[in-house]
Length: 389
Image (cartoon, rainbow, N blue to C red; front, side):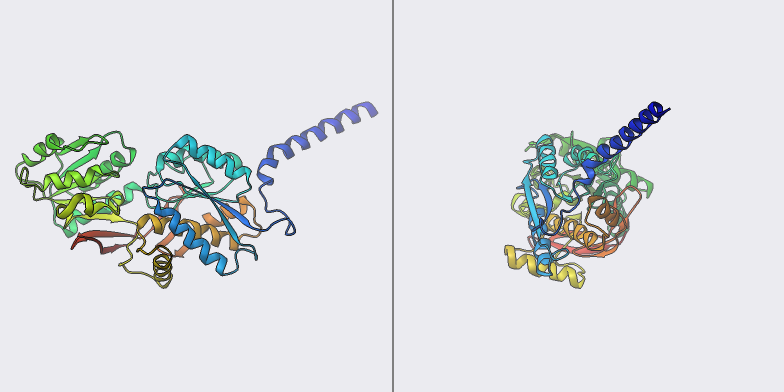
């Protein structure tokens, strides 16, 4: 009998040890005792030089929180990593940052990279808020991944509504970067919503171009030949190709009179430099505009950003600021500074008011938030319209 009891105790002890070992990987990321802790580490992964300014926005957020006394009296230390636009390198960075004891990760800047990192943060139980990614699939399969930006279906719907309701457009052509998850997803979202609202987009009206392309004669010839002429051209691009396409479309070779529309990828500092006067009068969805309807905290962000970097913040900068600030506010609300508690408080975020205004995170951990529509006027990107979700 004693032998049986001993075996039972041994098996039960083994069971308890297994549970402990399976969870210790997450437990080890709890904040160390005060006498061992000098800073609170937050990881930041980004892709310079484009967009690059997400880092600037996050640094402003760190300045604000540290000037206010940090978290529990400890300053935030932002551990910055450049992923060079490489998903595998970004995963390496995420693993290294977690090994260094970060309690959360802000970033990365692109959807494909975020989807590559998501399994890592899920495995280790480290919350992550992305900056620039807009693909709705980013948080799939990871309860620890949140999107700081609105999704492509949302901005596609915003631009379809704008085209029909504000511009009174009834026909559209679409130019899409082939093989780009961003460009294809956003184009499809625009097409679906534009058609639902009664607009027409013919098969011949949807043209594709390749990354690195500089001559768009074939695509623009098809669009210019459409009768009657289309009212708008939706061009979802990220790289330098799309302003070149607009420039060629407005040249005397084609004289395409349609208004060009785009998504948040148009928020480039070199947009006017590349596209010249051809991009005047175009419109695009964006996350933020320093000339828009700003709250008090939004104005404080703009002022601090300009003092620190000498230029107004763009959309990616605002996304970097807001993603980092949401993490810091969640940490202040958390009952204990563990990644799990921080993650839960991020999920509970409501009515966040920063550079932009975020209502909440939905059940898919997508950000439900305001947006803006910018235009190009007098050679500058300018605020045009404020959009509520």
